[in-house]
Length: 265
Image (cartoon, rainbow, N blue to C red; front, side, top):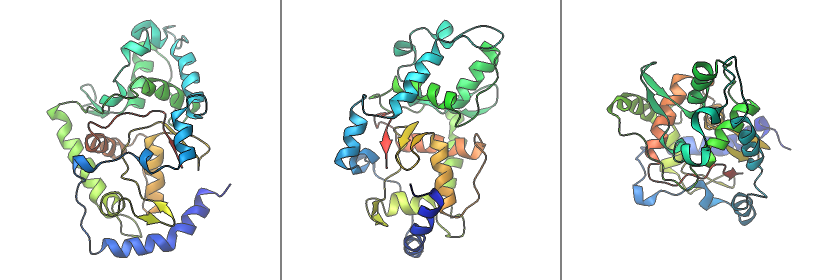
């Protein structure tokens, strides 16, 4: 298996060409009627893998999450089910509405942060680490309950400054390649970079199983990979900059159906 760093080195010449293209282009948001999921660009075999729950590797994380949902944790001795009951009903559409504004912290929190808030406040348990098996399992299980539901960011004016900050990050040139996210995923969407179709980068399927990773990963892991590919400084998992970017990306994908757990190359 080719390492992520080796792949980045292989993509470097093509990325340099794209950087040159970006000098004469300006990012513009994709019209709502032209948006498409990364699923549309998958090969037949990868589509079949996502479509069949018995073949989708991401469902292993979902099964682990289902077990954790009913497991008592922390000094309170409570499970998620003790508060929320049957996830098929109580969690339907929840992941499609995150990040959401958290009044206590005065800023948006994503679904992983909400899980940890519940653990700390309700279960009196230790928070789960980002990208840990248990965090990915629980967030995948919760995400599955929104599969097929339209992404519906909250109509909450308190989110606007954070959404705007995420939009600014998305459109800001960064790193040694002097690229913005929009140069790839808006201006050059559908074109090929080193033989790979450049997707529109809608967060419809996270946590998802990525063939390159051979594992399930969060949206923040993917954002981190992109920043490394741009040769830009990346942030710590859970950083406000990532959550702001997630807030914008979910608004950008509003109305698109959730696919969790998706499969991607």
